[in-house]
Amino acid sequence: MALPEPEPGLVFRYDFLWRREARAGRDTSKQRPACIAVATASEMISQRVVILPITHSQPTGDTIGIELTASVRRALGLDDQPCWVVVSEYNIDNWPNPGIAPLPNSRTSFAYGFLPPDLFERIKAEFLKRYDARKAVRR
Image 1 (cartoon, rainbow, N blue to C red):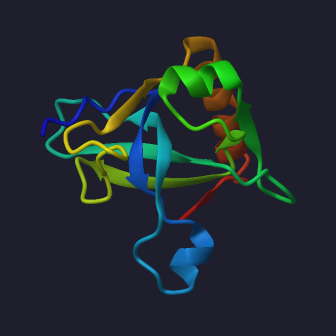
Image 2: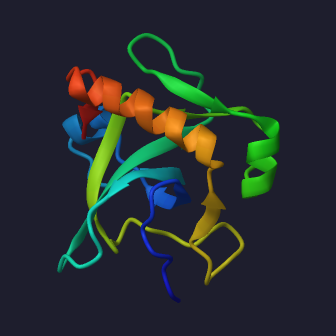
């Protein structure tokens, strides 16, 4: 089972651990679609990636997310329910790592595909704005 290269905009299946879960002592969570926001150079011994979760829960309060349109969800093979890429919370992890999981009903595919470039640039800009202002939380 070959993993895809960790490129920004890649949507893959991942065991994203929310900060509230980590604070409660958990070290695993629900496998969900997630998006790579930033990846270190591939020449590094251990690549690191910044991962943003994708959730069906509409953002409220301090949680900020960008909704994926129905056409983007269809192109990625996600379900029909509305979903958001959360830009106010992130994980940093190695690539590869044990939290990467095969897609549902597959044993060999780990990636849904890539976000459209214009949408990814918007997501990245919103995440970096919060990160720079120290308003994005890390697990």
